[in-house]
Length: 380
Image (tube, rainbow, N blue to C red; front, side, top):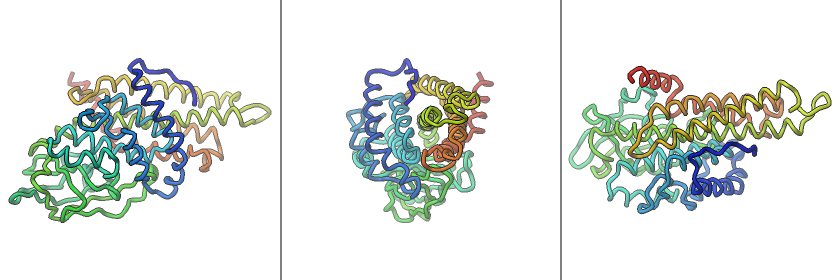
């Protein structure tokens, strides 16, 4: 693993977390990664192991069973896990950030007592339903509706591309109640709720996704999360840490591909000398290293400014926008440097090229980040 510059925001506690994760990744994550990519299955048992280490509630206060750490710790977790298994890390992100973190900061004490033990252990898998078949980035155009019916809410509509859909037992779902976005906690056992078949996809195959289907789905009033009509607040607050997590995944994937290039280019000979002595290969490695370091500096700098009561929409948009494309470029360079071996599965860089593309789409498209950044800069 190539030596990289340590961001100034990293504390001793952060370093202990990183070392714990690297040991876990080497012993438990790496051995199963290729198998689950090839079988397109999510390793639910591994998520429970992550939960046993206390790595699901990184951002949750210790009093409620979490680790009481910050956004920087979240970045470390996603970077280290994605170095080995981006697909699993995406499922972890959907569970730990899209459900657990989002749920916690909007939930009541009673709701926390009911759901946190299961999801923090990783034995109850969570997800989040926002994207719909007819509207993706246009979240405000969502068509899933909720109406009050006695002591229940009744939800109708569909969500699609939902990570952890096939395995999830509980979902945080957005719907329009009297045309105002509202958040609900949906259990798989609720009447009128079902999920569609697993959706095949280009990359991130060790993570699964499906549709969430609501057909007069009855939701107890106690499962309203927060207040009626306040779902947009929950959504926007959580989008920032989600984008940091996705940017950190890009960093982890890029680091892995850079290491693969360095290792291969020093061992493989061409025209009587190591590949690393050829100028074309040096360009790929040099530019990739610069991109990895630029990603690291931006992501960790932004992470130091993000928390439950502090916002950095401009920073998180910029971090994900840059990191997503940079990671794909580094993965593409790795495939090129490794040549035929890069195109085949042995070194796994072809997987990282496939996986890295998702970050340019999920959690906000490149175009959405460009629009958001331009709007924020021109309104200042």
